[in-house]
Length: 94
Image (cartoon, rainbow, N blue to C red; front, side, top):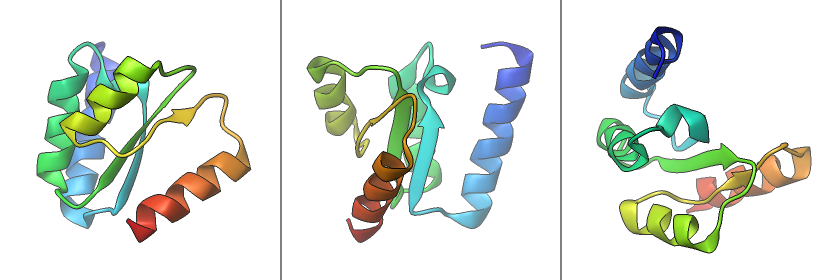
């Protein structure tokens, strides 16, 4: 992870720790290279959060592993307003 991305990641985790969001949308590339470890960091920082990676295409294997690891859903990129609103509404109700 480059220094700029690392800095953005740190700021995001600090913000999440301070404000305790219920829904976290995150670009999949911020979860690399160790997406399971990054996901666990987010969930430890805000245990009640629904973490939703944004990525061009998620295969069934990634989706199933994401759910097993504590993630909530995947938003397909490019984003559409309808998909974002629907995902956030369902995550918020969850």
